[in-house]
Image 1 (cartoon, rainbow, N blue to C red):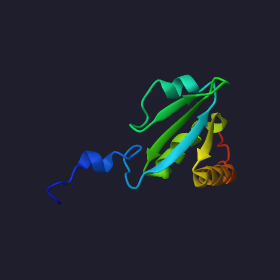
Image 2: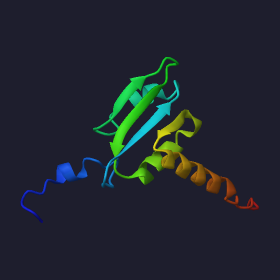
Image 3: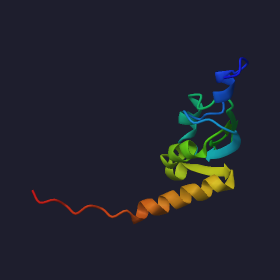
Length: 109
């Protein structure tokens, strides 16, 4: 390991635990979710812009979109991906897969 290696600098782009080359992610959150998003720091690079409708736009530079995708799916229609377009497509594909999952049969009591 190089003597000048700085782990903090190396891992600062991680959204949770996966790091790498940072990408800009911009998400529009509904007015209902805005207070929840504003109340904590999701990433050191985050910037929050208020919208006229009471919603917000959250911008972050993060390394791994897989972690962000899983996080955003939990917000459902209250989160809209503005950037990158590939993230929006990944979420759509994941939700389509979810809709195709067969539900187990009801067990007899």
